[in-house]
Length: 518
Image (tube, rainbow, N blue to C red; front, side, top):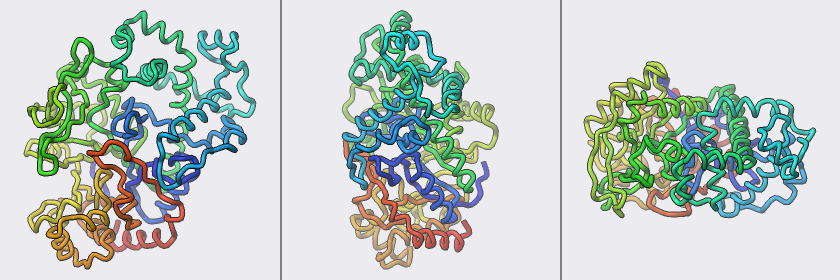
């Protein structure tokens, strides 16, 4: 797709301000859209929106199709009559600067269950739920305060999304029934989807399945309203689609034939990257690898459904680890590091030809082409005219570095840094002195306002897209870093304060957009 010159801000919705422990899709998100539109930026980039599990990472979700219920806005539930004002009187006192997932999750789930209780006696329920109503396990009447549009929309949502929702809701209901453990630890008949065991689970867990489906309905209802509002304000949203899915996901459980699994459905080989300058033992991600021959024999059906579903949520997709479509590092599942493995060819042009046939010639995709990039990766990216990525924090080893702005092709997206990097100020304060010296000389900077020096270089470059994390616009240090890829825990927690989204900052960004014609 031929993109027009534009700029944007990287900010995941969990980072938005608000009083309920985590950024959500409520009023603060609409104020953020208003503020961002006022800067003259045309792009809002986010991370994956899926339901997060262990480690709270949006890159390790329970589903490649579902939404994160923790993003549901309590205030919008109140507006829809799904919560009563009394439900929010005793809200927890949360740290406004950090997401405390340990405290947030049980509180939010309790709130969502209250909303479901007010909804759950809709007149058109499955027979198994109606039977439970008669036995007194579910309230017999829906609240008169609940919006009629919600009563009529839920069934439609379930029908339209049945291809993934049925498996996801069942998966999460069984997971709940087994204490939240990975599906690899479930009893064999459920793990291997024995038809009788699955039918029995659908019957005995019917109320849980309905509740989980309801959470998805509300998430998509709130997100789609916010997306429409962003479009009205002239914004497009860049989403993020990880190439691999989590092992503990409804996708792997419901489609085991599409992954390299053994007879007990455990991965035989897993994803990662080999050792490099930054990681002497490589990175062992642990995601199960695709059986691309099976995907091809099915016309890449699962992948095409995934892409279509993602493009209903966002306007442009950044494909994480794009190089995996050209070739990927295969690691034996028993290994404790990524040092031993082999490169295996990916599906390449055969896959992207199928994507073009399904989605059209103009693919709204950004290729995350960072890391060890070989000629086959570059050729695959350029065959489909996909913009790659440039990261300025990687640029300052010397004048021949391809991440320096003077070497950019127009068809690329430049970032000051990504969600996996330190903030630009943090990088400058802790980076190698030789690189910092070159950066000052290249940028004509004394280092006193380094984040904005980097932003200015990105904006004034020829790259079609220029994007920076909000932390860089705020000139924040390492304390505002969003993720440490090698660290367990303490990630994905940072949040912005509403007061930081000032008119002065908005005006400064607007001026830069005007000067650089973005």
